[in-house]
Amino acid sequence: MRVLLIGPPGAGKGTQAARIAAHFDLGNIATGALLREQVANGTELGQVAQEYMDRGDLVPDDLVIEMTRERMAQAAEEGGYVLDGYPRTLAQAEAAYRWAVARGIPFDLTLYFEIEEEELLARLAGRAREEHRSDDTEETVRHRLEVFAAQTHPLVDYYQRRGILVRINAVGPVDAISEQIFATLHWHKAKAMAAGVHRPEWALDATPG
Ligand code: AMP
Image 1 (cartoon, protein in one colour):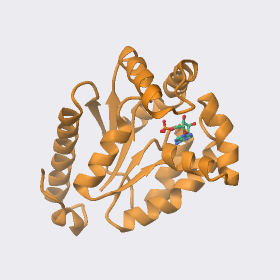
Image 2 (cartoon, rainbow, N blue to C red; image 1 turned 30 degrees about the vertical axis):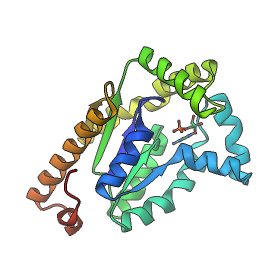
Image 3 (spheres, helix red, strand yellow; image 1 turned 90 degrees about the vertical axis):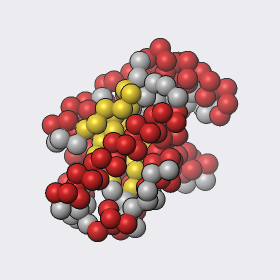
Image 4 (tube, rainbow, N blue to C red; image 1 turned 45 degrees about the horizontal axis):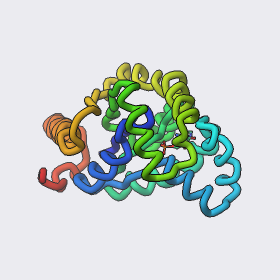
């Protein structure tokens, strides 16, 4: 199973990605976390990425696409992945789509985390206090929300046209949101199995719980 998560910063993608990965035994590929690791390790990529991240801008497409490919290939081989925070632009989506289709491993489903801006600002202020992320200052948060609206939100339409978009109500208790997501993914899996379009790994998957 190969699942993408799209949503504004603070929508709870990271939390749910970890839960989905554990529940369905998938790789969890979070580009923001991978980039923060590169920054912490002082790599060449990290040095370039840091200035974009600190401003709340997106890191250039080619760098992120390159960083993500091998991880996607490996995780796909091991049963699938959850992509948290990638793709984030139409150029990334196109590159990821062409690449995945060429290898016979296209995405199954994109989950769009829907949430109001007011709720996000409150959540991000909380996260800034807890995690001390340098890109969670109020000004940067506002900018990241604008960047989401301008550059990432168009992907909702893009994946809707491809017929793989599912909207998730990202407001409410974390457990309830997980249940909503698990039910969606189990349903999708059952449908795919019935249609006979999927590989046998579907049949071996974990039971709910
Ligand atoms: P996140 O942890 O997903 O909120 O990402 C933190 C920051 O990493 C973002 O604000 C971007 O600067 C950068 N980033 C993460 N994923 C991507 C991506 N797919 N494309 C470009 N920049 C990204």
